[in-house]
Length: 298
Image (tube, rainbow, N blue to C red; front, top):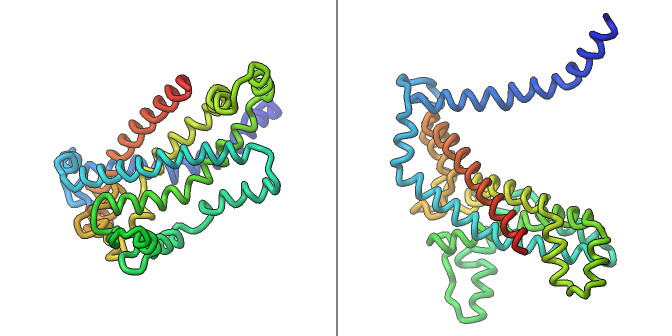
């Protein structure tokens, strides 16, 4: 009896720390945030009374929320589309026989290892209006200096370039690992059939790495819709999370930061958190289906 009890209880004891940590740092904060979102809650003073969906109602009629949502989606699309295509191309190049292949693959990952603060500072200087390298290069072609932070599209392009630089190599290595798992027999059969490299890539390689494509689509969507550090560091004029004087590059998380930590409206910020969760889930599902349809049509 004692032996049977040990065999049943011991495995549960081994996995218990995970569930304890998940409840304390995962489930409880999630449920507590939902509770806070239903109240008029000040970050410092706590519950101010009231219970209901008032925060959600205010959020859905808030023009700043829709502005932040549009900015987030715009920056995400400007970064994600070229990011995934470049990562796919880089992975295909790294999958071929190369000298010092390990060094090349390590170098591709370096941008993701660099601190996001350092990335923000460097790109802030690159896109500086008066002394930036980007405007200097544009000047060689007779283009007047651009105030990258002043308008919506220029600021979105600048922030998207930061995201593109940081995450392309990371996705490329994921694709590379998936490509190396594709059976060689398929490539040999394609070569015997006289298929070109381009046809082989789109008919064998891309369908063969479908799980990796789906993973990066979902993870990239979630990360892209939670973008905060890059635009916050790009906003050289302040740290309140407004994303420029006219909120031209304020993202959803920046707006959450503004409401929760600048205005101390924790109830509204909690409601925004749950709305962001729904938006991330919807976008992730849509992207996953688009990737599957893209792979099937390749």
